[in-house]
Amino acid sequence: MPLLLCGEQSAQLVFQQQALQFSQQQCADSVLALNEVEADEAWHDEALQTVFSQLPELAEQHKVRRTAQRFYAGLGRSLSLQQQFVRIASLDACVTQLMQLIERGSIGSRHPFSLLCGLIKKDEAKHVYVSKHFAQHLGASVSDMAEERLWVLGALMQLLKQQADQFEIIGVDLDKLEKRLELKWQ
Image (cartoon, rainbow, N blue to C red; front, side, top):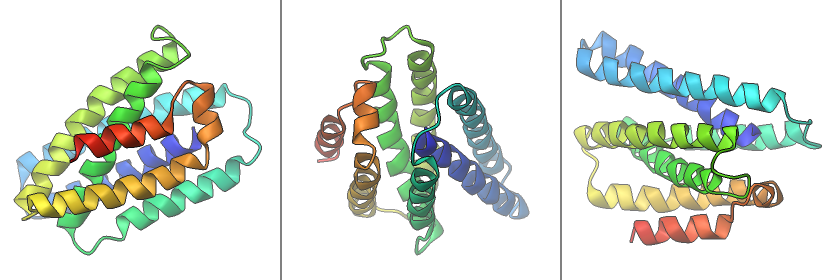
């Protein structure tokens, strides 16, 4: 949960900042799209916070949260806005696949958390589209996207595998996730 929550909070901040920047350039359609993504991320954060509040405290919860914060800060240290949107699109594509594995995991497809993950998955798929659109609008090429996808996937898997035992509890095989994304992006 700390990994998911940090991701949602980080995304809210990024999309909020970009919406403000685009509003200064008077790009109403862009601001609307970014605000919609930010609203989705805020809803995901609120829903995940509710779930998290009902779980027992993880032994190294603060350590996990700090590690996740470093990961998301590293993602944000991009060379350009174009690269940042490519990274966001890549990360959201990973999250879409992760949510699908949770949704179909061992807790059952009718479990409230599985249903929540299914809703988040659908929103994240929209976010991939929005971020990819902005990246392309800013000049990102197919090769730029391919290179960043692999970097994001490697960094994300390094982060997630630190909590592999927690993912196993809910029936998520991180190796399967990694292979699925590698195949998808070849």
